[in-house]
Length: 113
Length: 110
Image (cartoon, rainbow over all chains, first blue to last red; front, side):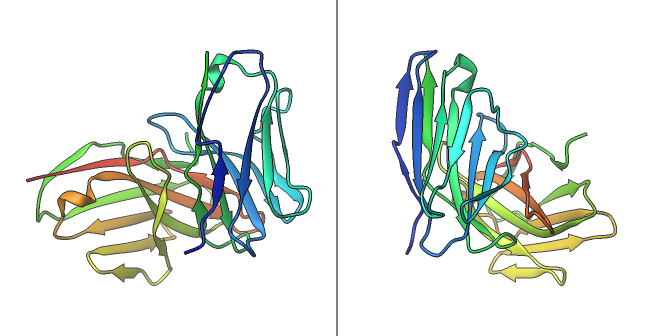
């Protein structure tokens, strides 16, 4: 069964450092999502791509976060500089198209110290 | 008011019980609806899509009420393994923006 791949699984970084997460969606999935999930809450959409284009980044803190999906396949989410409040699970998901169900990767658990 | 609201619970039920969760949404332009299951410290996994006519998958039944803007999930004959957090997801029609609820926690006890 095809899966969404994410790396790393866990990341500990010091505040003010840069950190990057990588996601490889299910092959053929045009839509890719990055979510942030804080314990006890549902995932919050940070950015959504349709192929290589951003279709929604309204909740992305653009002063420190950036995301790209240059060839419309895999994607990178970067935080620079990291802050203590960025500690969370970062989830990547993909879907065949914009209206269909999304499948999640295992996530990257970020701890900022 | 949140765009998607769920009763956080927790719902504590005995094995074999029937339990129902509701999820209300505020955006009338919403087109697609889903239920996900999330185990502790794991990623959400798709449980089922919610269709206008309702749908059933074994012990699970999902319903959509567009007039009142809510979706529901019914679990019959609860198993210990059903213990998890259940998240509803609402997608807009045009941009396909997905909004998750904060989840409802279910604990099934022997």
